[in-house]
Length: 181
Image (tube, rainbow, N blue to C red; front, top):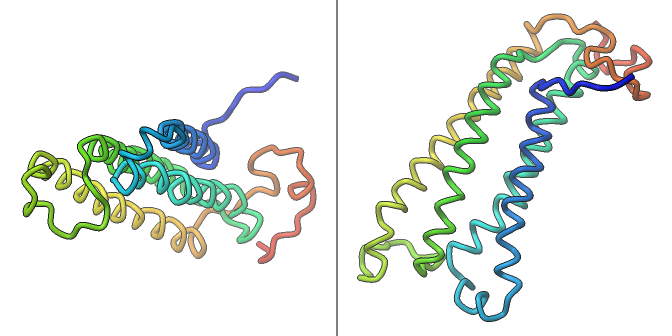
């Protein structure tokens, strides 16, 4: 009886999903106000609201599911240490990429502009744009850790026990992996 949450990689990504989805969704409150929406419409504020909810949160759910069901699919475990490195890099860099976009939206930074240096009022957001760009590149690069972990674990991961998560759900009660050990 009772329960203690184990912060496995799958659980971290599930909690990260909630965090990203809620913080991204909170900016929707501002966009729901007509007078604020008139200002924020077509600015980076909308990008900072939409992409974490529809993109990053979905990826966190996919990563959580991959780590959770990998043992039943392949009969092997993914490396937890690499998984946690991947989680923390992705979590911090996602916030580092999309968080500053709210401030760029406050400054009136429009979407779909290729060059911010030709407009005087956007001169103040050029350093912020550089930060967002480098954070986005780092976020994309951090996914190499996941890809390495995924493919390395398929062929060389340690053998998975029949119920590695000590779960009471039905899929873990039978040893019915797609690829048997």
